[in-house]
Image (cartoon, rainbow, N blue to C red; front, side, top):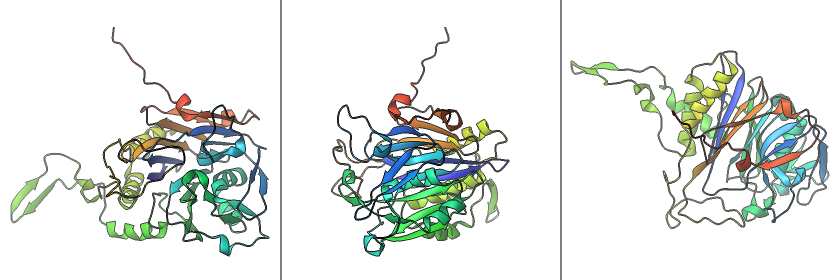
Length: 361
């Protein structure tokens, strides 16, 4: 359902690309949270936890519940899916249905937030991956039910990257929290992250070097064109295969020497994970499960498609976005936005650029 990866340029500056796939369109918004913004998290069965953002944040967000007509959404109504803060720390939410329930293991007298607020908390409180690891070790995260998702307990895991190139994965499996360093900077969906790393051991043969000539039983063999280096890459859109391909592209893509070139390189890489409607379908009687959202019905046979793609320049604190309506990105510069002290949110579709029509005449 989602693919994220980290790309390092020739100067080891970090960029993060991600796609988000679902079988339905949701009312995504893009929000700016200023430094000093007050937020609160109320976890089921625990006292609420309040915090103030130590740095500004720009993020793709979703309302916790579908808004009513004319409703003005406030900062605490919106939950972070993908974002970056003014320190160059990024956060991504990705589907992981094996989460389970952890309420029985939590202590009622400990500081606790709902998992639905983990993105806003991480980006608001921390500057580096090391700080996230230390901070979350003393904070309880409750896997609350989400009414908008039909009462599911937060079926997600989370990727965090910082401007130094450090990465980690926050994951709950059957209620048990793990916070793992991510040496490859790649994340997809189930199985567990540790399984994906082990699976990479099956691909020691991967290389970007074409073997275009050979010999078999004395007969010379010559490829008619280039591109054979990718022959060993797994081809499906399953999370297992996407993880391997993402690691391959992040590792072998040419290292750009300028920031704008690096952003363009990540855009090219993420095109390999862009999924058009209809490429794979899951008929209800034979298909796998899909995320269902209260108030939004599937009107076609389920087909996962790329709803939006993001690129984050962690050094320049820029978030680039494009939605499924076009191939052009728009850019939000957090350093520029940080001049404002006002929270603001707008629907992503209002920000997406229209494809221009040109004329040679």
